Length: 437
Image (cartoon, rainbow, N blue to C red):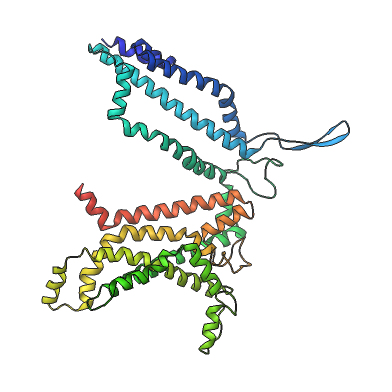
């Protein structure tokens, strides 16, 4: 007979907590009843408007109306506020649905225990069970809620903006309403010449920048680490401290300092070149030299990070491998190619992929050093050194092209996530870890 479990599940389906009360768990049942009662009070006024807001984004813009012969501005619907409020309400609704499902499952399980002749847990026993066996899961509810509303919800909001026409000057609420436009923003970005020329140009430079900055900092750090670890090098501790100084200084300070050093015809770098009879270079004003400058400065900032990482890996390589290679007559280059490089790459490949993904989104290095400049007259609101992430920022903060910026953000996420997942799964460290498990 499954009488108790069926009745408890049906009662909890009708109204949260009734199944628990039927199973004689009165305090737990009252808590579930209170949750549903408060939810009903909240959703009676909010849920219908949330669905209306998601689908319509408002239907009444701000307008001028004459009141006793005087024109007054009557505020209308603010599409973006409506969208945010609707998202919050629907997320709360999803949480309540999960709680409703858990309430049904709990009632069904307790009913099954009653049928087996077991006593239902008291409220005190339930609390003790949670503290002893489910404490970690319960404790994670609070940070999980924070992640849901402060991380996941903004991401969903950004994705939704890409499918609207939320952009200046014609669709900025509350003066004008925002409407759903489907994939029109993506079509404009990828195929409309005025936007696509900028997008593909900035995308190409973003990939070139990510490759060059990752390769130069990684192999530069490898070279420095190998030099410091060479036998016969004295004062190794001193060299490690000196070489880590650029990393110890906050990146913002280093980049702003470098911006001043490379700035203008009479900047310190050009003055130093003048002392040696060399002409000044347009480090930050010429498109080519500006790109060279950001690569050089990024090496200065990034090489110490790779050096620290690789030096740690070098200390884990068994010394007897090198001794065996020396017995076989291997040269220093052969020892590096056969032993050192494979071991270093095996340990640091996931980090190398992470550095590449980070460089695609390296906002600070570009924005603080060049601001995306010099200006490119063929681009839409982008400079010659702008990455997709800095262009996205300019479109949002300076131009109010929020829908276009959101579309760029989605494409950028797909590129970075796709590249990272594909390459990480192909690394030997991932494959061997999978085999061990």
